[in-house]
Figure (tube, rainbow, N blue to C red):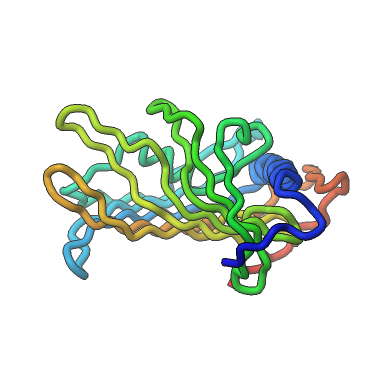
Length: 242
């Protein structure tokens, strides 16, 4: 990490640019189909002692309404934790985190400096919600913004808040989400991983999460997606952040 001020722009300028690009990204991804595989495991030492596994197809019905279809769902074997509605929401919405112009007022954003992330030069920010609301899942952690495209290419943190009520505890692991460039424009999430120890009152539980987002395809031959006011070309294979 280099404690270096931005060159040729301001911190507020970077935030404004990436938030606007994130809003474009959010609208564009809503017009793509893709496949998502989810694995949640508990570990005892190096051994897996419980697992939840589901795979989803994110698609559209004949009225162009977005759908999520479960394509694979063996019986879970988790015994020390259980999957809750908040966990499912995190898999769908928080782990592939976006921070658009609309959400910027809800977050504290602190510029840290610049860092090389593989072959990319990035600006690094720590972010946290200004208010914690148990009914509204939010992200807390760190984001890496590509210095050329002004898009988030990596996130590290967790969903908040952890939920505790009497003997009930619903805790959430820290995770890292990586993005890859799709259609040579948008950096879409392609891989999320977590390996964290959750500190329950009844004892610690090591949890591992692996999520893969694959087969991004733009929906509808007549669908138009704009980027900086220009229509995107036909879909191409994603460029990886290696």
